[in-house]
Amino acid sequence: MMSPTELHDFFRNDRFAEHVGIELLEAAPGRARARLVIDDRHLNAVGVAHGAAIFSLADLVFAVASNSHGTVALGVNVSVSFMKAARRGALTAEAEEVSINPKLATYLIRVLDEDETLIALMQGTVYRKRDALREHLP
Image (cartoon, rainbow, N blue to C red; front, side, top):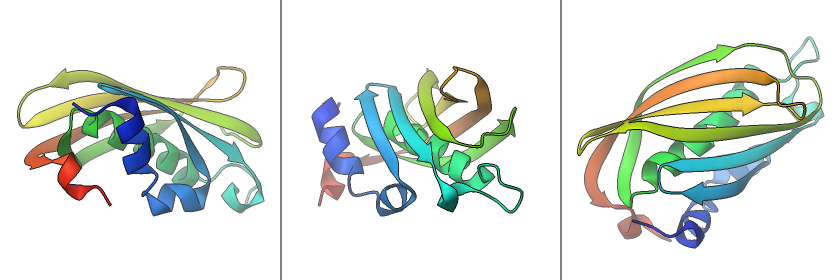
C-alpha cells in the first residue's frame, strides 16, 4: 500500500496530466479525486469542453485509485458516457473502487461540474501486475 503522499509524488510524474492542467486533490486506497479548470485550450470546435479533456481528467483518477494499492495497474477496458456539455469552470473527477482481486480491479469514475451536475460517467477495469509501483518511482 502506498501512502497518499507517495501517490501524489508518483503521479506528479504524469507529464500528460500536468500538460492538460489536471490537479490531483486526493489519493487514498481505491479512491482518488482531481480537478481541471476548463479554459480555451480545452474547448472543441463548437465551444464546449473536448471529450478528450474530460476523459483525461477521469483517466487520471482511474490511474491513481487503481495504483493506490502499490501494485502496477494498467487499464484494459474503459467505457465513458458524456451526460452534459461543460463550457467553463472547474470539473472534478472522483474514482471509487467497486471490485478488486489479485488480477483485475474495476472502478467507477464520476466527473462533476461546479454545481455537482454529472458531466460524465466512466467505468474502467485494470490488470494488476505483480510489479511493485515503488520500482517505478523516479
